[in-house]
Image 1: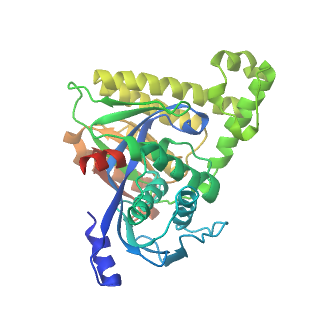
Image 2: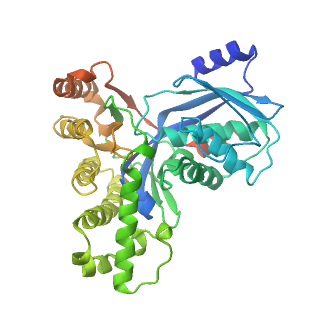
Length: 398
């Protein structure tokens, strides 16, 4: 429970909140940048996330204060404007709009929302959306299934905020289970919880924040998605495969043999994006096998390979994040790591040996701030463990 959000709620409304909603952040050790192409990904929820202390408002008004951003947000739950404003509360407006299309909303919600880590790279946008959905559903006596949380949160980002994301973030935050690796097929939506083997060495999750914030809507995220779709579109046309609208086209629809047959006809940029897609699919599959066997050394090696492919083939990452990646590679005790999230500013994540945690924290910080001294006071790191997603927590509360 977030003590700060509860205390702030009480100071604003002079009563205890009706409830506390929580959604964890997520990491995706393997499966970088391919969920929007129907790829296969690995994911884990972590024990940090978004809290919201909330109460019901009978007049239908949504009134939310963030402890991380200025300004209290207000709108009527049945009168959400069609166009986004361009602030953090677009995720709340979009979520209310998407939910109201299928469920009648009688009550609004007042609340205080707080994130436990800096913004950038841990799917905080999806976590905010899902956390708010829980609160809004609670005051309106609505019980959502896992696929509904995922669908409403994805539609919020795609249709309202304008980010062409896949289902990775939402699925991890909803479906994951503690001490397990989520193996998710983003084309078929089939998923498996892979329990860590008894032989698995101890590990913790390290998060290294670059000190730079980013917005996916203003980054090259959507451009990369379009490049992947265009590559698939060309390949299907060359091969005579029936295709539909570009917006419905994904690389997963193109067999690898077709890609190899027509690769030379693609622009070099499209080849790079597509090479990343197929190699990352392989890494996600091999990583799942390594996890089942408890082979954390191999899994970490695949994570480093994923990071290098993200830099060289997918061409994401600012200089600061790329520096963090190479520092992690050279730091003893780090099994493997890469950018977390889209890779446009934000943070890096790694699986590390907890017995070397203090040395890792010192060595990464020292090397990074030596290269970027102006980020002193903005760079930070934290260590986390795997955690249950929203649906697993709901089951525990039954």
